[in-house]
Image 1 (cartoon, rainbow, N blue to C red):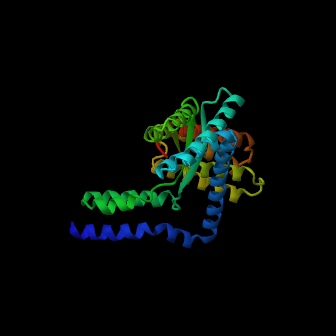
Image 2 (image 1 turned 90 degrees about the horizontal axis):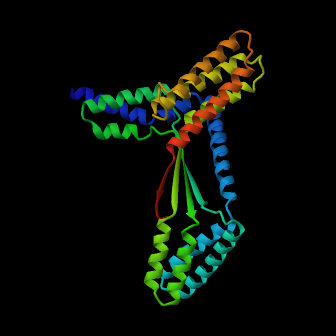
Length: 304
């Protein structure tokens, strides 16, 4: 049993570096994968940036001024804090006057990308090795092996609650004018705790599979071999999404997509009349991603 443990640990070390080996053995294919991933990530990032651009600039600047006030109070600079809160209050008033229905307004966001470059076979191999390690109570080695098994984008967006935050700003300014510095600081920090933070997890295997299908649909009908390879890669990405836990193997949407890709491959090998099939699978991908995003989205209150 001890010998098996030693072997498993060595295998674990090899697997932790295997995505680099994968890249070296398939340099040209890996280069295309990186380019495709970059395009996919940039597309999502652009969408996030566009949503933030729609936020009233007065709201974004107003929040920045309240942060300036908090920092000033930490340094006991009451004058700067008052000036910042006066600016913030005017900015919020302008924003609300322009749109009285303002509720949750996005004021900041960030994107974190975890890229697992291996294929579904590597994921299966890693999981199997991890199970062997756990059987031998090599828990830390198993944990290290599981850590890289992430292939997603996490989009974090902060929303300012306009029904509450501007009022807190006015209250803090009033407290400062009354000489209540500690109370003003507490009011601002409490308001900052009321900022709503939204997390959305977007599985890269699903959007990569979608990208591969779209790429295949844009090829000339004579490029059968290339189209089939792209669709094979899309199938592998879908399987990877299941193995990494981003979707369920028996989920109707997943089963439908797998079947539709097979149908397209069958048509390509035959008469190659696939336009309608491509349109349907594009819609089904959009539906699955939309469902996943709505399920993975969580909101919580946090101080940033």
